[in-house]
Length: 66
Length: 141
Image (cartoon, rainbow over all chains, first blue to last red; front, side):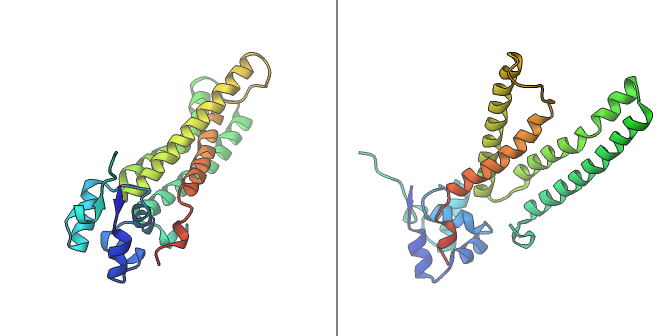
């Protein structure tokens, strides 16, 4: 799954550490999600959406199959 | 990882492992001295011989507790992967060694080496985890 986390974070001038602190997760988690190596659980995805005050589908974009 | 950078679950894990490993050293020294001096027989020998295994079982319990207590789902996933790598490594080496031993190609090794292999496998699992996040340290600040 693709996501716009890095862009949204940059818009707010937040570091990965800032986001990690706000979400109460490790910075490794934020990095792994941001770089697409880990898809968060639904509860964490909702927390991320709440943090950026956006619907989940505005942050996470499912990869289209041909 | 520095102790100060650890979360609560990781700190508790480190404290538990240090406690169990200290206990292991003390128990092993005590049991070894007991066998040398008293040459126990029967039930007391069995009970004494089992004692050093208990802190090792305690470390396995501590790893299980870390899996339960870790609130960060990504770190928990990494620990699960690390444990699976350790299990695969220990079972693979033990199976190969067992057949080599059965066909008298290698000497006998005590069964508790399975635990040592598993702990070594955790190190291997840690390397697998590290290889899966090559860009992590350079990004995001």
